[in-house]
Image 1 (cartoon, rainbow, N blue to C red):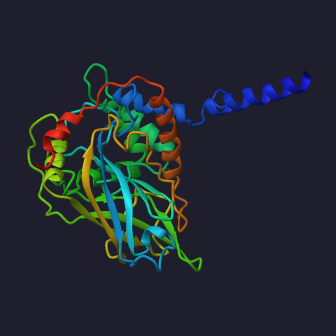
Image 2 (tube, rainbow, N blue to C red):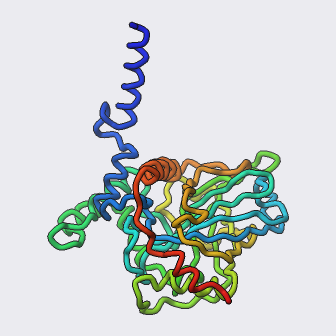
Image 3 (tube, one colour):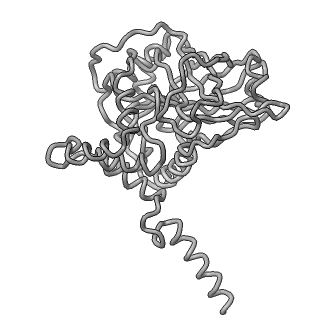
Length: 344
């Protein structure tokens, strides 16, 4: 009985530690979920961030140009299957589309060898925080004031004054050129990873998905779901494609701070072409149960010292656990909407 008591005490202590009860100042998964909810509310059954989205599918084709950098099978000549997702940032699953909303492309790439490469990439030039705690504090500083529905300048001003790196990153995000929609946008890894070659050489990299479609500047879109309507219409007519451009970092380039861009003259390698040709609703679609965890990496790609991917991995798992046990309303992008846009 004494032994059982010791074991149970250890189990309870482990749960208490993971929940943050024994360390009230430690940032936990639950506290990150609370910060996201403070900004956009709780919407049961939906992802806690990038809640409004649609599933897509297609393939990634490599011609072998990145093989000297990485031994990952996805870079060998040939085709890998893709299940992906386009979404808008934020935890509101029924938010209205708008030109400046941050857009994301999430991908699960599965080459024939059975490995996986998952990523969540965004159409902004840098991330807005250096650490998970800084991101959480930014969320709380910019949460809407109940009286106005907008961030309170009395909170935002002091926060940005004390975090000049965040202020600089937000300025870069706000100044970015915005394209007309999901299909002609460029999506960036933001975080640094390392490619490992067959002979063990490790190279710091970031990457972009650059559209092969003509880029059209954003206009004044109309309709609650116009960005998704345009995407579905385009996919109903023809596949959409992007080039995967891998940027090779120099020894002087920051790898642990995603708020800092790398110089524009860094060498790039075209690693392959992503093609998407199918869209499906998240209500039973192939991406519904996938967490686009950036630490699900194949042999030949490893994390760097950037702390954000590990924080995202933990938050995505907690978000999945929560939504898996909740009753969900139908998604904003319904099967009927997608069927109406299908090619004849």
